[in-house]
Image (cartoon, rainbow, N blue to C red; front, top):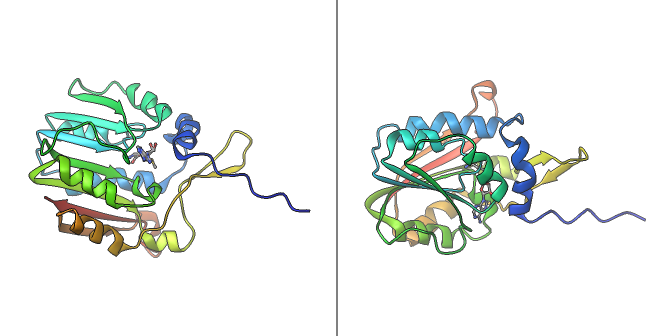
Length: 216
Ligand SMILES: C[S@@+](CC[C@H](N)C(=O)[O-])C[C@H]1O[C@@H](n2cnc3c(N)ncnc32)[C@H](O)[C@@H]1O
């Protein structure tokens, strides 16, 4: 008799469990995202930035360096606790928030919404893009960087080694490239830039990341 596979933990609980080692694991996807974010957003000077799914705050210091204020949100208390330990500058605030609920920002109050490696965990992209469009000021930007769909088609998804050495896969959903552009378009956001990124050590492989810069 075969034992059915264990039900994957809920996503927030999985990230709580991953938080202690997230910054230390070998993770070329995480590292490549950290490299490409400043290359695309480095010229922007937002007053108010909302970082959605900030995790352990890997990108928060960079966002603070270009922004007058950063509100960094995530639904994993474990990831937020790690981010708070980074000693980030005073213009950074953290808040716990499920991105599938209403975000803690007023209408048209944000100049930059940033999102790195989060949307694979949302089954339906529409609520995310609708909230981004609601909080963005006219002319404001939305950065989205995700594991490239090609990688998802080949079976990649967020995963880490659990306490007993087993591989824990975090619930993830495949989104085609057009799913992102269609959800953004329905929300009234315009695509300004699309890039595909290969890790320098993997130049012959499939692109690892895809990023979009949308504008309201
Ligand atoms: C792979 S980590 C990326 C963290 C960070 N952006 C980075 O690039 O290192 C994904 C993050 O998204 C968060 N997340 C996933 N789904 C979420 C949701 N519905 N609401 C809030 N946060 C969510 C997780 O808790 C986790 O911290």
